[in-house]
Image (cartoon, rainbow, N blue to C red; front, side):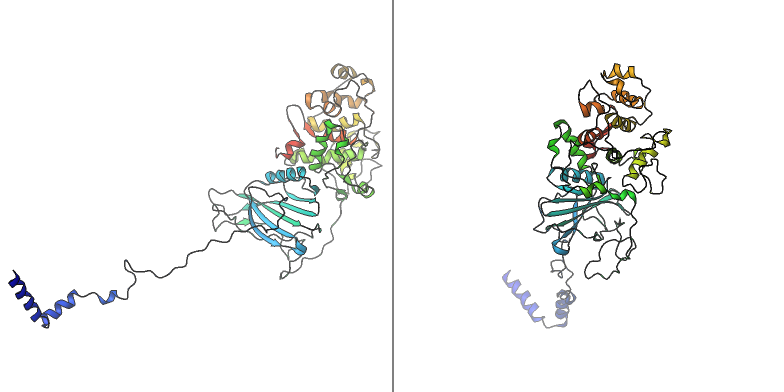
Length: 461
């Protein structure tokens, strides 16, 4: 065997330089084309750029912790403003009324002084706490190219705050956000924005520094009678002076911006934090609260709202001209037939007496039509005596008897029971206090179908 191997090896060595051996070596050699080809298994591929995640928008480190942030909202942008002010923009898939109710509750219970808040489910809150001034703007938006499982609407939430209490200028245009920054949003999702931009005739804010946009034209707003009423909520410091049973009603209504004051009253009041719960309420003031409370309760139901009137309407009362700051409210109640006037066929009701004290029977006569939403029942003195058992029923005005009887049918939601408690004396001509008027306006409806200020604050409709 060893001899055979030696012979074969000698033969191959001898043939190494022969043409046949050279051809065999070339056929078994590695392919030279593979030496410079990197696209083979086991070779190191060329380096590729790995997409980096977009940086998450974060609040500044000095953002005040006391400012409430809606929990189901995502921060979209942060913009510094002038004089240390700050502008933050959030988006949420929750409806605007949920967010509005959240801020009404937060500002109403955490020692904030509410300077302004919206009368319906959208608009602007402005609140102050010590030297911190905050403005929250809630605006629904529509998604024009939503995915199959995405909501067709979202809510834009903008928060401006001023740490030194400097008053805000007109609103700065919000950042143009075309899509929500969450995994369910696709690049094709677009949000229809209705925010006026610089250069638009509807833009009312200042142009930011370094902006190339043309300034908006200056326009002079037309003042209507309704704008003379200050629609601001207050955190009153003297609610504890009201009867304990009525304090919750005042607190809820003040949070809803119902307990407003006219411009004339505001000028003469040096301390706007006082509600003066035991002070007599005037007829003009109750008329304003009545419309404001009703429309706040039914903000999502225009069919149940009372319309105020324009300055061109012919006055129903000779002592409430169009120049009167409360004309839109008093005239609106007359136009709706809520209060007696010449419009409702009461030819003797030519004077409203706006500064006269409101009486108990007038409180019911104006309020009950908005509770029952129907004509008041026929009533007589004996029917009122048998139901309520008032010892002084004979002193009640004949027109007010119907309201008193209808109120008895409301059971535990009766205005008389809620405002005056248990009593066998109605005292129909007695003046009503501001606290008692607030208690009457806290609830609208019947025992089986109604809504309270507490319901509205909780987001119920």
